[in-house]
Structure formats: structure tokens, C-alpha cells
Length: 230
Ligand code: TIU
Image 1 (cartoon, helix red, strand yellow):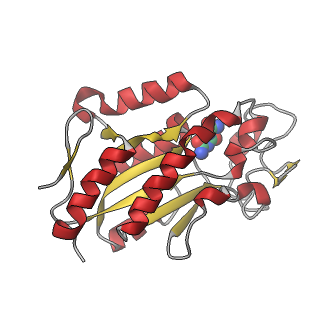
Image 2: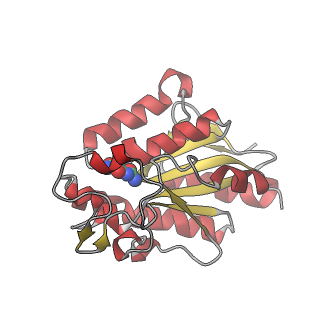
């Protein structure tokens, strides 16, 4: 059995089943000035810190030929998939669908909706377009994971306490064994990131585990050749 050094205790890689990397919403809307994160009043520069480590983790999954799912939070141009409550929230001058410097805010296909170039998905990787904070709500993610026999998830991206945590909770309720990768997730609020990491692994791992990217890669490199399904 191969384990990953994690909190609150070692995480066991599956003897049968498969793993996937989930990269949540590494899109310009949250990372750059003029996007959704910025119009909500956040310091978007804070999120850049994880980009090099997340790139290493993505490259590690690619080298091991393991599946990667990228998500993008977005809405259809007519906003038919966006609840009025979400449009109203924030009370700012600009909102979802408004014209910003990177195109219409949080609208599918606009320049600001693209994943940052450093982490751009490869053609063989899946992109999930999601209207909610969680990646399972109103998407094909669960059926895709089931089709590939995926049981264990490594969850990364932004922001920790919003879309990353929501996705991990959704996944946990569906029976997935989840690790939040500590140095591959970031928040506009450092204290919220810390609290989120603590709350998911409290109570014996009530929502799952946390581990660093280096520990995840070390475990996966030992696991893949000997135990993974092909
Ligand atoms: N505002 C904020 O922190 N996050 C979001 O609105 N979406 C995601 O976390 N992706």
C-alpha cells in the first residue's frame, strides 16, 4: 500500500480505483485586475503565489499520465444559468455580465474567463464550465469521474474557502476521498485559507485530508507504476 504523508493522518492511495487532479477556476477573472475578484474589492495579486507550485503539480500529473480536470466559473452570455441573487450580490458598480477591461465579467468565452496562460489545459485534459461555486453543481463532472473509475481527488485552485472548499465538500458527500493541496490553493484572505485547511482536516478528517504538493507527487510517483489500474 502506498500512502501520502498528510493531515490529519496518512492518506492511502487506492489499490483499485484511480486518482485525478482537480484545478479550480485558475482563470483571469480571479487573478487579474478588472475581473470578478477585483470588482468584489479583493487584492487579486495575493493569488499568484501558488502558480509555480501548482504548475509543478500539474506537470507531475502529466508526466505520470494521470487525469486532470480544470474548472472555469462562468455563465452563458444571456445569463440564463445565473440566479438573480448571484447577479445582485456585492452591490458594486459592475456585476456578472457587465463589460469590463477583459470583456464581460464571468461570461463564458470572454478573454477574462480564460485560464491563465501558465496553467493552460492541454487538449487531452477536461475543462468543466460551472455556473456555481461547487464543481459538481449543474456539471458533468461526477459522470465523467465515474466513467473513468476515479475515486480519489486532489483538489487545488482558487479561492480556498469559496469554490475549492465547496467542491471538496460536494465531492466528500459523494464518497470521494479528497486531499486539499495546501500550497496549491489560495484565498484573498490568508486567515480564511488557514481556517479552511484546519476545518477540513479537523474531527479526524471530517471532509478529507490536506497535504503539500511535494508529498502528493512523492506518493503518486511510488504508486502509479505498481498499483494503478490501466
Ligand atoms: N469570490 C471568491 O472568493 N471566489 C469566487 O467567487 N469563486 C471562486 O472561488 N472560484
